[in-house]
Structures are given as C-alpha cells and as structure tokens.
Image (tube, rainbow, N blue to C red; front, side, top):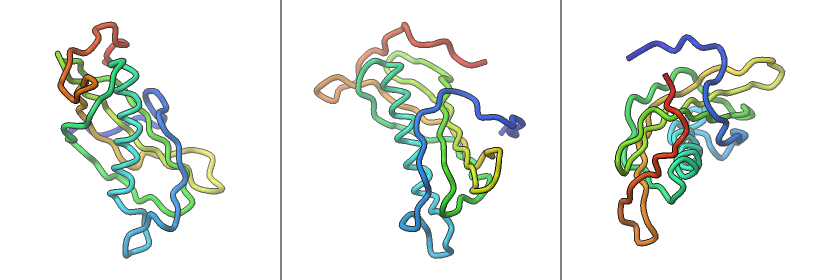
Length: 136
C-alpha cells in the first residue's frame, strides 16, 4: 500500500454532497457504509462516462479509511482511470472532506473500484477503447 502524499484532490470531480445527521453511526460519526456508497455512485458515473455504457460494480479493493467524516462536512469524490480491460475498468476514487470554517479539504477515504461495462440485457460488453488516458 502506498501512502497518500497529495494535498490536493486528483482526478475528475464526480459527486459532491453534504454529510447529514441521518448518515451517522452509533458514535455520531458519518457511517463508513454511507461514504463507501457515495464513492461508488461517483465512480459509477465516471465509469459509465468512460465506457459510454451502463456499468456495474464488481469489486472494491484497497479501501483506506484515513479520517472521520462528521455531520456538516462537504464530501467530494474524485475519480482517476487506472486500468481498462476488455469488459472492465478500474477506477481510483478519493473522497475529500471540507469542514465548515476551514479553507482546505483533506483526504478521508480512497480505494480502487472495478466496474464492468454491460449491455441493455445486463451482459458484459467490450469497453470502448477511446477512453481517456490512464493516470500514471
């Protein structure tokens, strides 16, 4: 696992949302599952845009929960294309939070999500190879 050294989000902004009281766990912090679902929504938007088709999530790997998210934090998810296979895409997702009264967002969660391009019948299909360049 590599340590995150960036102080700025990397990739395309896919989703931005406000963490609300209904999204908390028993400790009053934002539930990790809520954050994971926001990342998956953002990643799905990005993957569908790249594949130019419907996509479905097939794997999540290397998830790192780095900092807690609190009610009122503005959460933004950024995506970077990592790999394009025959029918699948791997996307690096970063979730960044901005707290009220602060000037700079900070990384809260990151991981790799794999999506498969599917046709109208839900069957895997070849990814359009005119995808944007893969991050280095």
